[in-house]
Length: 86
Image (cartoon, rainbow, N blue to C red; front, side):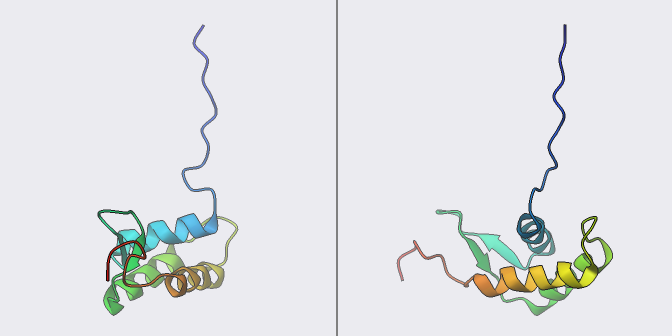
């Protein structure tokens, strides 16, 4: 008999959702060698991410909370990979 498992949501945390939105908007990208998220310092991409957060926020989260989480994630990232040689 074929059994199916109930699928988990693709994104489990608000932080994970915020990282996905920032990647989609092009505001952050990953270090190709180590996988760390890096800030691209692109103000237009940041504005796109904020617009997405206001219009398409997760269920149960207000637009203001979604934007605040985006900003928290951006503040926690640098523009260089901590493992790459300076």
